[in-house]
Image (cartoon, rainbow, N blue to C red; front, side):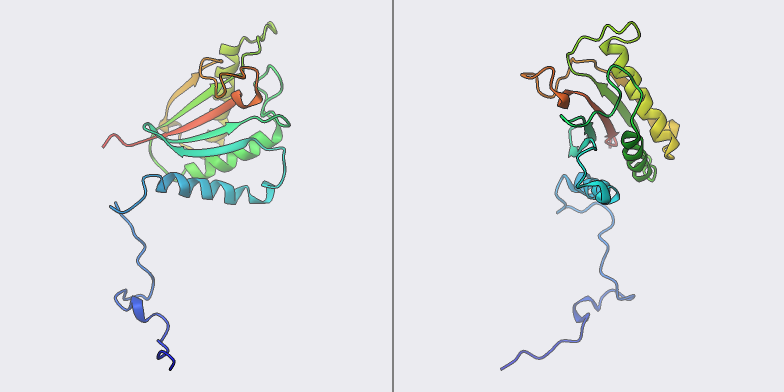
Length: 187
């Protein structure tokens, strides 16, 4: 025969207001990357109408020993900044401001890092050190404009091409990236 039909919500009787337990607080069973995957999902959601477009930086969110690292990386068809300059294009501004709005609800310290590829820039204005630093500072201004408190910014760093993402392809576009590190609470 058929199982007796259960009234909806019978299992969650214990919650007086009828909602499911929210799981606040430290959960022992939580996967260590829970926060990172939540942020990744949030970022993809606010960018979802743009996801099918190629002309956006590649966005990665990962849990590292230092904290949650959000990387925005150039690809072959897309550069976040004009070549050899720290002038962001409109999509870059849009993406970083959306990420910034997601981050402005937090309170932990933030480190911003700029990276370039190994192409030598001798434009008279910038070398790769200045370029990576200027781009990181530009990201800082965009985050603050999106509501992130300036007091949370712990460091702004320019790495030039010293931390290549693909060392075997030093000129590769994926080496040009911005990193926004949400520093883990030193519990």
